[in-house]
Every structure is written in structure tokens, then in C-alpha cells.
Length: 224
Image 1: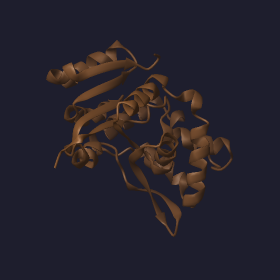
Image 2: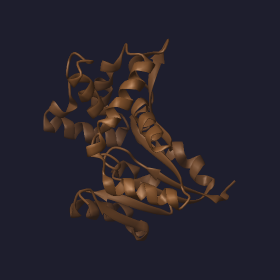
Image 3: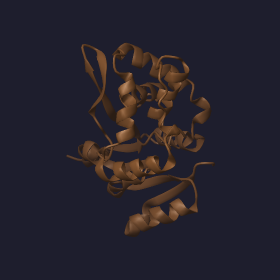
Image 4: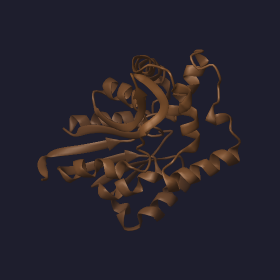
């Protein structure tokens, strides 16, 4: 049943609130701290492999490189990953996209419930959500006896619409803020959307994808 008193604003994280891909940046941060011994950063992979992985993940919902990278978290406790994620997020202050943080504060003042939704891993999403005093939906690491298995129990990649559809059905107004082309179906479900873009080429791509829905879109350039 729709609640006509509830207004919702959904924010992506990576590329929307922060310039970073937070999962990979977290792994690099752990490596730089000497917590992960073998640095295997996705950023060091050849461009062609990264490009192919991006295409594959956008079609299949499976990010092979991310799955390989998070294996490095195996054997760490839930407590330690939570603690490190808080420290990591505190280190990202200079990597915030200020325009979207300002937009979030604007929607808070207007009485919107704020939710962050991202395929990043849950220690990171939880740390950000607690810092901003908002709810979150994210991918979830798998644990056994409170120790990380290095695998995902739940992956939100290409699943935001599915995970949020029941919530969206209950609210009067829904806003989405994202830079992610894979959020296209979620964008189509919302009443209004703020799209974060790098350049005019991104705007043209979004405009083509959205077709008749373009009137409900505002574009925000990341360097603003």
C-alpha cells in the first residue's frame, strides 16, 4: 500500500557520492596499510581486460575482477573489516563529490527519507550510512564463524530495481541520484532523477537510453 506521506531519495555511492570505486579503493587502502600482503589492484590490469570485464558485468551482473579482488578479505573478522571500513571512509573526505552531498542535505531538509544503494561491499556501505545517518542497501560479504570467506553472500550488481521495488511501491515520491548506466531500470521507476555525468558524451548516452523519460532528468557534471 502506498504511503502518501513518505518521500524517498535513493543515492548511489561509487561515482555519485565519491569519485572512487569504493570496493577497489578499500582494497588498495588495506594494501597500503600492509593488511593485505599481495597487492593485486584491479587498476593495474590491462585496459582491454578492464573494459571487457565492465561489458561482461553490465550484461551478466557478475563482476569477475571484483570477485577475484575480494578473495583477499578471506580470514578477516567482521569486527576488523567494519573497523577498517570506518577508517577508510574517513580518509575519503577529499574524494567526495560535493554537489551530490549538498543535494542529499537539500533532500533531507525537504523531509525525504534517504537511502544509499550500491553494489559496494557492506562494511563500506554501512560505514558511509552511519556517517550520514541514512539507511543502506549493498552487496553483502559472506561470513563463517564471524570470519569473512572472501566471497559474496549477496550481490546488488544489476539488482537495485529488484531490491528496492517493494520500497518504491510504498512511497509517494521517489528520487534517484546516480552516475551508473546499469541503474537505468531504477531510473525509469522514479519520479525524478539526478544523473551524475563526466561530459556531454555521457549526457547524449543517457538521453538516448531514456528516450521519453528525459523530461524528469537533471544532469550534474562531476567537476561541479
